[in-house]
Length: 251
Ligand SMILES: Nc1ncnc2c1ncn2[C@@H]1O[C@H](COP(=O)(O)OP(=O)(O)OP(=O)(O)O)[C@@H](O)[C@H]1O
Ligand SMILES: [Mg+2]
Image (cartoon, rainbow, N blue to C red; front, side):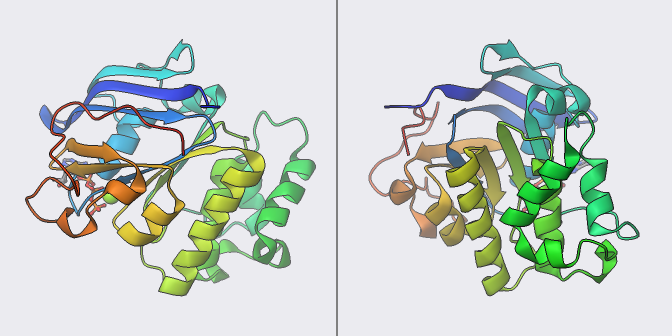
C-alpha cells in the first residue's frame, strides 16, 4: 500500500534580499519515506530546507503538511506541527552536556525522561557521554546529538542538512545507518540534502537532483545518473525529465 503524502511542496521559491536562489521547487514526501535532495555546492539545498522550515521569510509558493497549509509558518510553529530540523554542521551547544542539549529540545514533551531513554536506545554512544559537555564529543557523536535534538519532539518529518559533512567515511556510514534505523523503527519521514551521493541514494526511497536553485530530476534512487549530478547533463540514465518532477513513488 502506498503511504499518504505527508509533505507537498509546490512552486516554492526562496530569496535573499530580493535574489531568488531557490526557484519554483516542487517535491513531495510520503509518510515514512526517506527522500534525498542531491546537488553540488551552492545548488540551494540549505536554502531549500531553511525556506521549508520557515527560517527564511522571503519565500513564495505553497507548503502543505498533510492537510495543513504551513506555507507561512515560522520554525516554532513548524516544530509544533511535527517537523524537526537538523542544520548543516549539526549545531550543538558545546558548553552544555549531552543531556542538557537534548533537554533544550524537549519543550512540550510530556515525559522527557522517556524521550531521553528512546534517544539513548537509538544512540548508545550518547548514553555513555550524557553527563559530558558536547564540546568533547567526536564529530560523529556531535552529528548524532544534533539528530537526537531534532528527534526529541517526535517529529513526523525530519529535515536533515548534509549529515555526512566533515565526517570520515566510517562515521558518515554510521550516521546514515542511524537515520535509516530511525526511519524503519520509529517511522519518521526524513528529507536529507546531501552531496555524498552514493550513501544518500542507498538510504533513500526517492531522490531529487537540484542544480542552480531548481529541481532538475526526480526519480527512484536507481534511476539517478550519479556521474551527471555535477555535470551539465540532466541526471537521468534513460531520458530527460526537465520540468515538473514526477510524483514520488512508494519506496
Ligand atoms: N545568507 C545568505 N545571503 C545571501 N546569499 C546566500 C546566503 N546563504 C546562501 N546564499 C547563496 O545562495 C546560494 C545557495 O546556497 P546554499 O547554502 O543554499 O547552497 P547548498 O546547496 O546548501 O551548498 P553547500 O552544499 O555548499 O552547503 C549560493 O549562491 C549562496 O552563495
Ligand atoms: Mg548547504
